[in-house]
Image 1: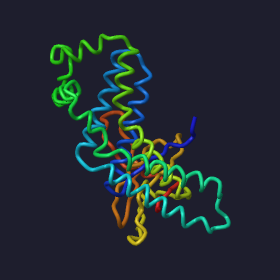
Image 2: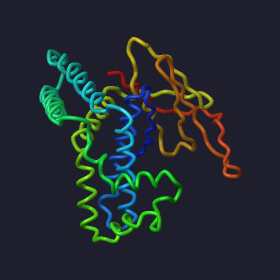
Image 3: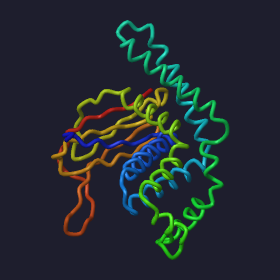
Image 4: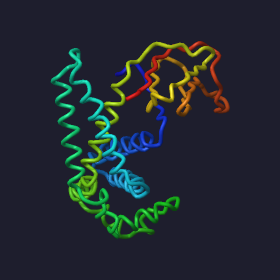
Length: 256
């Protein structure tokens, strides 16, 4: 088991959306392996959340911009004698392949799913607390009663519409996370603040804390600065309070 807990805070809307999608893709993949009705429900719930995010913005354009930006940044490292050329070339090829694949995919991502009446009905009812139960959606109830293999095929097929862009988002976040080395810091009385250079925009803050630390990190911030507060809750009433202890942690500011 990893001896550290990592807390992340995005500092712009694009990375915030990418992190939410990364979470939803991972959640869907986890439950897709299960065979129960509840696994299928959880997978479909994640799929509907993914569809809702893609329906609100032109994410394909955003992802392509990030892929091309990272390719340009990495290409400038080719003249650096200390760079791992094999790894650099592999990453550049992967960026190029994903960019080409997304360009070839004409139109919005998963546009075909928007006209799926089965998914639309579930999405509409899911906005109501408990609205996706059996008597509200008999068609959904019927589908859940089909063999697990059939449900898994359907779910995998729907999620497959997002495969290329999910891979691209995972690669972008991997490059961002690897762009910064974690450095030891101390949060005095449970509080730490850092000013950022607006000319070198930080995309993601990562705070790594030992698992034995009896509190958690709450990160907030924007373009110019961010703060880290270490909080714990009272077991009696559940209220949160900032610790008065000095907390050692490791900090990574991802600027790429």
